[in-house]
Image 1: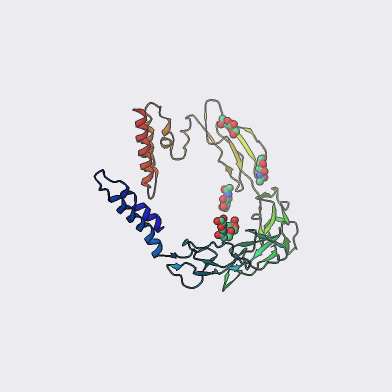
Image 2 (image 1 turned 45 degrees about the horizontal axis):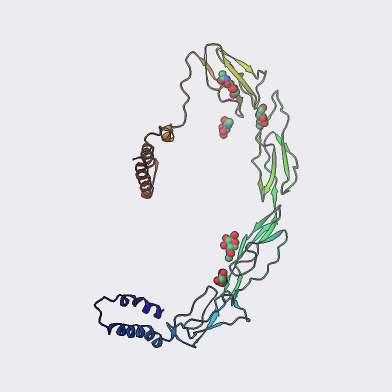
Length: 361
Ligand SMILES: *[C@@H]1O[C@H](CO)[C@@H](O)[C@H](O)[C@H]1NC(C)=O
Ligand SMILES: *[C@@H]1O[C@H](CO)[C@@H](O)[C@H](O)[C@H]1NC(C)=O
Ligand SMILES: *[C@@H]1O[C@H](CO)[C@@H](O)[C@H](O)[C@H]1NC(C)=O
Ligand SMILES: *[C@@H]1O[C@H](CO)[C@@H](O)[C@H](O)[C@H]1NC(C)=O
Ligand SMILES: *[C@@H]1O[C@H](CO)[C@@H](O)[C@H](O)[C@H]1NC(C)=O
């Protein structure tokens, strides 16, 4: 290093003017030689020894070491020494440290973990080495209690798992709730296994009207104490006879309108339908959407969500001036953007704008 800096200083001396005296080349050569050899003879040392992720020089480091001096390394916490490889470096004649393999210290491993019953261990990083992790996965029908992921980490001077292995417990569900006017399969069972199904049915009605089942009739045990959905409801659903003044039922005509019954309606010729031409009997015995009406006036244009058109249709403008959409897009962006605005975006657009204008001219 010292030699090269000396050489770098040399070139200016080579540019001798024509007026230089005959003696000057000698003076210059001597000067050059002293510059080259002085530093190397005066500082016969190595600099700080290199550091590694897995090992560090033992003891305090010095800023320079004499040729022949030796520096011992020690493995960093979490690493072990590979006895076959030397653990030191030497300051060589050329003022360079001798090589040391970065493999000298290898990662310690955490103890192999037995798979708890009803689970398997996922060796996430392919090893049990320091810094790696393992994940516990319960078998289907079991759920995990404890830490799902354990890390191989430092524990004093050694490595150890970050916690104790979790447990996998069988998933069970308690009986789902009873509901009025219904019965379900498996009544009397206290505990249902994972994926067990319970089927609700409405009991026959006592009066002229039957109960309708509203919701899911089948419930599955999907997690610890968790059913796939809420239980259904059984209730009498009876919607009023759908009548539409100046209109008629196109389809769905019946004597009784029970749950989920759908009717289609239309207006007499010349009249306008206000509402939907389809309506379904809902769980609360009302028509959903409500039965429409037939009027002489056409319905007002359907209300759509807040009109975002202007901002969406920006780039549709004709091509002749390609700079315009850019401007309007900048404008659009600034007005739509909420919160802290990134100035870089606008600068980017301005640059794009200038480039476009240069390209046009
Ligand atoms: C060791 O050195 C090799 C080659 O320079 C490099 O690919 C590797 O990542 C290093 N290993 C460590 C643990 O630093
Ligand atoms: C182990 O694997 C996980 C998931 O791929 C990754 O996030 C993590 O950085 C890896 N750790 C090591 C030490 O390689
Ligand atoms: C309601 O009726 C539709 C069509 O008739 C049917 O697909 C749907 O399963 C019914 N829903 C219920 C909850 O009975
Ligand atoms: C009535 O509903 C059907 C089905 O949704 C639709 O295809 C038809 O265009 C509607 N008729 C009128 C007049 O709105
Ligand atoms: C029926 O009534 C119940 C209770 O008033 C309400 O929570 C539910 O949203 C209603 N359902 C419909 C489809 O209107």
